[in-house]
Length: 630
Image (tube, rainbow, N blue to C red; front, side, top):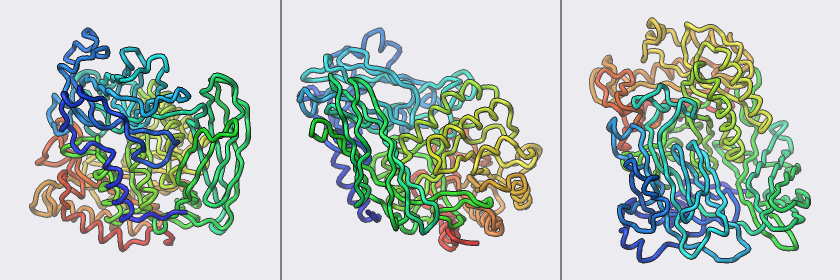
């Protein structure tokens, strides 16, 4: 088992930084033309199979200007018209204009030499996150396409198309349709996409994977615990695919800490896949928790013909997340979590954060005294790894953001598919304690939303019965209890009492918060309830009774935290958000003197400076018993 602290994590980032381009635009096109690059072995995050290579270094970039497909940018060998950048990359980072928010199309190109010419390898390219529509070519030939950011996708590189120097070209559009996830809120160039800036580009890393005959593209390792002192049961569901030209008899074996076991043997036809399912027992497990984030090293070996063809590595934490008596529990102890929301954003990199920025994001949350981090979309694999190691629980959400019944029926199939992808891709992280299916859908649930809630909850429970299914909804006393929430185990209330007025001033008075929370408890006595958002804008000094000042924010936070402390059945509260970030042109956030497009409810300013409310929240969080209270 492994228990990594912040010092070890800093060392890890320094080591990994050697794999990442030092600058985002330092190399020249001439340097690229002189010698194509060979990908670097290794990956930013540890979980995954052997044979990964980072496609970092120098990439080429150009905007489409309406002529990319006409002029066949995908087939060009010349570097004329392209400029050098590093990937990850957000092409509109550092720009805060309406023009930079509007939809655009750009092209990325990587010239590379394969790390090995061994003919037995099948090569796969993996994109960690592309916003939003990607079309990919290899050496001028179509490779595939994908829509949607925040989760990875992979494409096989045809052996017939590979050569000495290979040219990978990606056409990216950051436009969203009315049925994407998140969808465009309304048609036209002024349409809003989600609650954060619409950064376009290759927002996370790109990798090559070498597969030697057998691959494990899907690995689920789910521990469960019947009681705090019980032995743990670990369920495996591993998909193995045969990339060979003939049938192979494949055996999978695993180690979970010091426990080893076989997962079975199956004969797999060429081009086919098989699922290996098994369970093993861990007696007297060391449990994962925020105060003691114990992790077990797990390996899964795939062998055929007496040779190990692939090893999959991950870190697993044994813990139980349950709901009992209307309280969320970790390891059968009631939770009274305090946390923050995060949005990946930086003044220079936008959403394409480098490893030190990702480390700072998670360590800042830990230093604040938070035990939970909420995101409105799936975080990067590296950030989730950091959460595992630091002991930060995660509320993982698919970006079904403010989608009302008028379009939800059309969006729902994509949303459920995205939820399934999130669970299968990220479910091995012990830090994740909830699968959230959406944010601020219509608080008066209509037929389409009710159908979506039922379908999403059923899909989540079928894939992962070890975690509660959640939703975040708008706190508003004008709406009655919603029967559709019966499918969910965890409810998040976005509480802006005393900040936004709400319909007819329904939430303008902060003194109404306590009675509203009591009413929600009466509505949903069996579900665990947390405050999933609360916050106030602050971008200047001034009187404590003037909205938008640092002094008002500190006073507001103090009042809110006082109500939460007096609500013993509440399972937690999450401040929105840790840091300022960009939202959209014209954003005011309820601030009478706003700085659009900047969201300024953060405890940290956009440049990273702490606001006075940071100290208020830190003192409250560190003095609150967040696990095991009454």
